[in-house]
Image 1 (cartoon, rainbow, N blue to C red):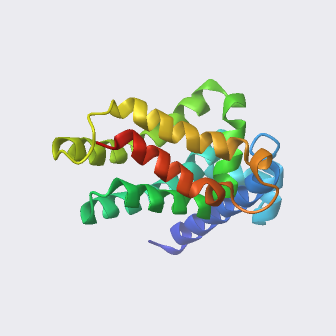
Image 2: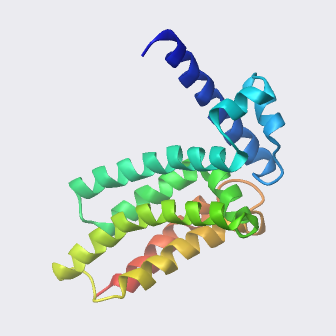
Image 3: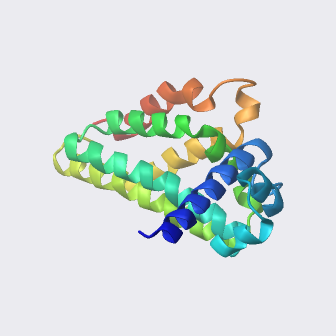
Amino acid sequence: MNKRQVQKQYTREKIITAAKEIFIEKGIINTATSQIAIVAGIAHGTLFLHFPSKDALVIELLDVELLKFSENIKLLISETADIAFILDQYLNLIQAEEGFFSSLARELPSYKDELRRKILFRESLVREHFHQVIKKGIEDNIYAHADIPSALTFLFGTINYYLSLKTSFTTEGSVIEKFHDQIVKTFMKILEK
């Protein structure tokens, strides 16, 4: 990379970091691109050189976060077929980024259709990793013959429910931490032989 490309990448990362910080604090809907530019320390127009819209920035940030999840889950899957352990680690990853994912889950119904579809598509990529492990577990006679899509809809719906209503369940701390064991235990009951 030449110096200009390095600077461009650095600016892009500053924008993403600033956006994440503000999205957690104010929510995605209530954040203006001008606020992101101020926190990033760039001109407002510079933001649009890197991202044509706030929606594009949201998708990029989501891709960055979910890529970390996906890579971690792939690594876990290569090491173990224990779905309880994989789910435990996945919940730890969500908890580490709970502010962002809580904002996303809370506001999802209010997003434009295209943005909502893009977000749900990206979530489906993570769901696919779980699907593979459960399918293999069923084939290996470890888990009951469950309807995998329904089981995963229950799992991800439950996680999103707690994230979207975080302030109803806890006034401080992590809602995922609070319900972590219950989520794992309930999901494993679905798969129990």
